[in-house]
Each structure stands twice: as structure tokens, then as C-alpha cells.
Picture 1: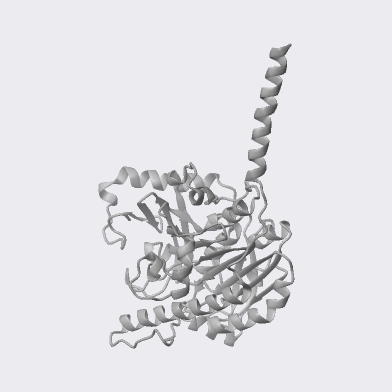
Picture 2: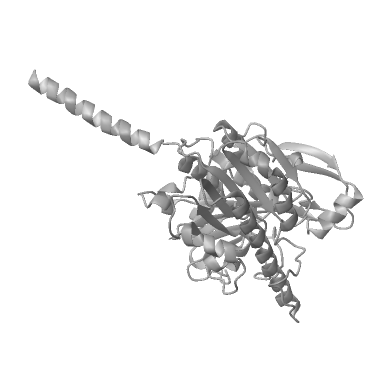
Length: 433
């Protein structure tokens, strides 16, 4: 009888410990959540990532008490699919937002009748997830691609799309929302800055005119980062994000700046167009932690879930990065990170890519195969595919096996007609040739 009682007590003790551990794991944190996307921002033009010029004093200071992911990659190099992947934790070929405004370009004329993809209504987006956690949700985007037309408003209590009005005006708009946001209880806020997206402005005090065109463009680009950084700092202080706030700073994609012959983005899946900053800042983080494991922007939503104490969703493709942050055992080093780009510029093009450890495999238009060792060749000058065909084929096979078997949603489209003013604005942003 004593043995039975002893076994019962032992089982109860084990169950009690398990229950306590489970409770601790699921402890809810009512942090306000702020996600800032700085459009077209290359990670390697920020001091926390080794850039010599002080382009972002505030972000640099913030990084001293943040998690800095050094190898974060966008899901695409084009705004609409890349941002939709942040919102859904799915790859572009899963959520189906492939085009955005005028990703289809005309060679000689611009057809004002445009078809855009929308985030499928069946997908639960980041703001919808936050609403399910009883958050009030606010969003403001300074890019026409992040709009109601493409379904980015799903789940927001208040959402506005601007047309590159600049960081100062976005700041002023948010000040008008301040009392409503601050008085709403716990809140989720999404901010999409357009600086330093082209056209690049030479902003004081960082801009210095250069004689060579390429150097002057880079000087303008850097000055725009400084400009955005200034207003992020102002918002941080105005809203008190140093307290009870989970703040995430990232980008939708990188920027070319002539690494492979072009200035902007949406041309390829080379490193410079898909390597983005990812900085995570919240009260529990007291000092900087550098993480070098490759991660994806589709991991942002699952990470928010986990930090707040909510369970993962099996409908999301990304992974929580909290085990990396906490230094817990994980297998995130062994995963494959996928990238995808589809556009039609005179003719259709589709690029696929896989990040696996230090390896970066790219397949351009189903024909040109490239493999780069990012550990030795960060600028991706040397295609070593011919010497490592076995590895290259393994990565290619992984991509297409995943794409064939993964969950996919029915692509939703919407037809719109642009006026001349809208077309001219899109021209100035580089969305129209």
C-alpha cells in the first residue's frame, strides 16, 4: 500500500512540476507591440552591422540593449510580396501576393488598368493575430504598395496608406493618433517608412555631394537612413517605447547600389537585395546580443507570439526566434530559408533561392544556377555551382519539393484603374519604367 501511495505522490510531483513549467512557458506579457519596416534598407549600411559611417545614431544606441540578427533575409526583393510575408509568416508562392502595383511593366506604354494580388482573406494576418490577443491595432504605411487594395488593412482598427510623404510627415501623422493609441490599452502599431527608398533625397546633415554619380547616390541613400532614424527616435520618446514595449525594426528588402550592376531592387535575389536588418528590443533584454544564425522575416510573427506567451500557429511557416534569443537548444541552424521573386518586365521572370547555413543557392528563370559561399564571398562575386553541383542540386530539390507540398492559398486578384497622377507617382518611385 505504501508503495502505491509513494508512486502516486511521485506521479503527482512530476505532474505538478510539468504543470508549473507549462504555466511559466505560457505566461502572458502585455507588451505593446511596435513593428517598424524601413523600406529598402540594407543591413550593411547600419553601424550595428559594421558600417563605418554613422547613418543611424538612435538605432545604433538602441542595439546596445537589443537582439541583433546579423543574417536576416527577406522573403523577396519586391515590396508587396516581401511585406505580405511579414504579415502572414508565409512565403510569396504560398500567400500569392506576387506582383504589387505595376510589378507588370510595359515596354512602351503604361496601361492604367492594373491587376494586383491581395492577401487572401482566409489568411490570418499579423494585425488580425494581435486583435485575437485583445490588442487595438494601428497601421500607417508610406508606400502605395502597402494598401487596402492589396489587403494590408485586414485586422487594423485604424490604417492609412500614404504616398512617400517622408518620415517627418509620418511622425506628424502618428502624433495626431497618439492620444487614441495611448488610451486604447495594449496596442499593436505597424509603421512602414519609405525613406531610404528611391528617389533618394540628399538630407542634411549627413548628405555630402559627390562628383561621381554612384557615390552621390550612396551619399543620398545614407542621408535618408539618418533622416528616418531621427524620427524613429522621436517616436520612441513620444510614445515611451522604453517601457512595456516589444519593438522590432526591420526592412522589407535590401537595395542594389551597383553590387551587381543596378541601383535599386526587385531585379534579383542576390545578397544585397534580400539581406535586411532585424533588431528586437523589449524590457527583458538588458544588453546587446548578436545572433548569426540565418533567419527570415517570416519568423517575426511567430517570434511575437512566443515572446508574448502565446502558442504557435501551425498555419504559419516561420519559426519563433525566442530559443535563439534565450540561448535554448534548437535546430534553427539546420533549416532552409526560401526566397522568391516573380515579375513581368517586358517578359516574365521568376527567381527562386535557398539560404542554408552559409550557402546561398539561386535559380534564375529556371535556367541559370548559382551557388555562393556567403562566409567567404559576401558580395557574391564567385559562382561556385560548377564545383559543388551536388549541394546545389540538393538545395534546388528542397525548394521545389517544399513548394509542391506546402500549404497554398487561392490567389486573390483585384482590378483597378490608375489616374495619371498615380502613374507619375509610381514612376518617381521606380515602380514604372
